[in-house]
Image (cartoon, rainbow, N blue to C red; front, top):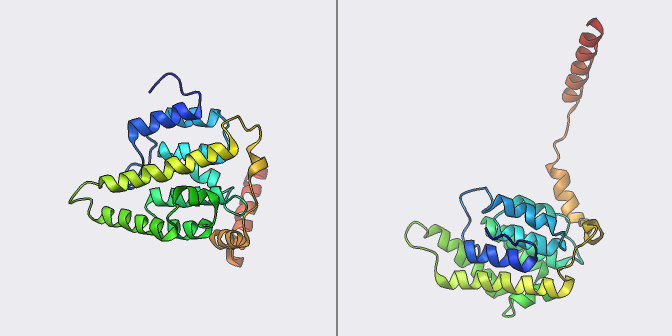
Length: 213
């Protein structure tokens, strides 16, 4: 790893030249360079640029954390990066859904001037390449399209937000949409009456044990 990881461009160049641009999902859940995750966070970049660097470093949990705070209008570029993240994960249906939501945005058009259908064809081709992975390596065409997509999106975000430090990233976060709120609510387990009774009994038992000591 080079000594100078003190700027967006340096880290971007290091990650892409060392590990390439992501096309097929990785088998390992670990980042390419765990130390780079710290360097990326220390830059305090605009969340879109930080998320892109985390994706290039295969630190998908860190990228996902940032994307969750940019998944509603007017943060179209954040929503697009969320779709890119799902593409890198191999979750192509979710990727298509996010791409569809932002297809009208300048950020998406900068990466896919041909339009949404071409982007979806790319996703389908990557999915097919996963199925053929045991038979042949990923084609150079897919690698080139992945490079083009990420390079163009990165350049758009750099031009839009700059690479200066963002003192408080929460100032650029957006409230989740009603759709996202509903989905989150469904994921929260409901505590039924029996569970509440069980918790109360456990609490009473702990209290009794404490008093008897």
